[in-house]
Amino acid sequence: MVTAITNDIKIIVEVEFQQKQPNGIVMENIFAYRITIENHSEQTIKLLRRHWYITDCTHAQREVEGEGVVGLQPIIEPGNRHQYVSGCNIKSDFGKMYGFYSFEQLVDGKALKVVIPAFNLIVPYRMN
Image 1 (cartoon, helix red, strand yellow):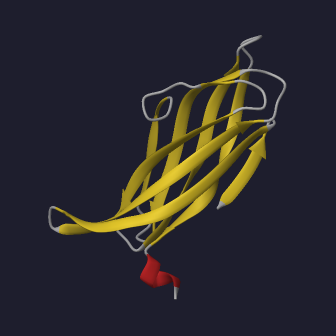
Image 2 (tube, one colour):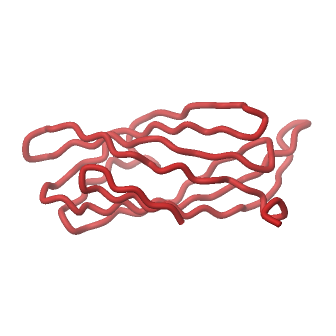
């Protein structure tokens, strides 16, 4: 588990290897990750966008960017949290993901950029 706090917003990431799966002629490794977003600020916030950087040991890098998370733009009151699960595939046995969320404070429209801490994507047999 990795965590980061930016602008009083805490991001907690847990990742789990799911399976190796063929994708055409290449085998890909599938990972699931659970993100918990905790609002430790005094303002109600709305998650507007996400921006991910995904790399693997072959030095392949891709970016994923878009509105919300898993089809939602959650509103998170002070002291509350939002949690979701998503997934990622990579062609190598290890890689990493990191990025940021764009939030808006509902009271005044102030934009907030919140860091998603880097976390590793490692096939279990590589951890020995």
